Amino acid sequence: MLARNGGLMKEKVLGYFKETLAEMRKVVWPDQRYVSVATTIILALVFLTGVFVMAVDFGLGKFFSALLGR
Image (cartoon, rainbow, N blue to C red; front, top):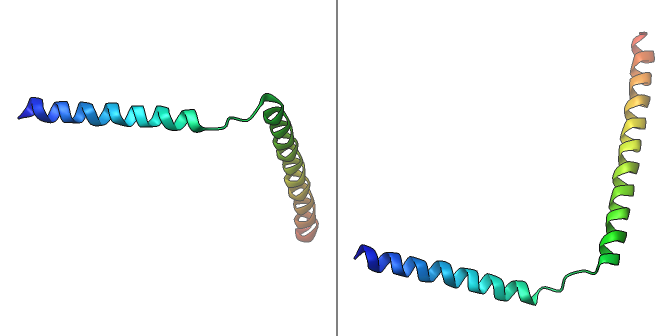
């Protein structure tokens, strides 16, 4: 009984990996130029967001310091 269930489990696992491989072959992967451009845009936006957050933090810090008289 145990060997039979183990064999069934092995078939399920092998079937899963075969289906996964078949699906991975269907994927249309982006070319290197697209990935480079998208990465550059994302890094620029992350940098700009960081600068914006830093400026808002600095401005609010100055505002509340002046408001509280420190």
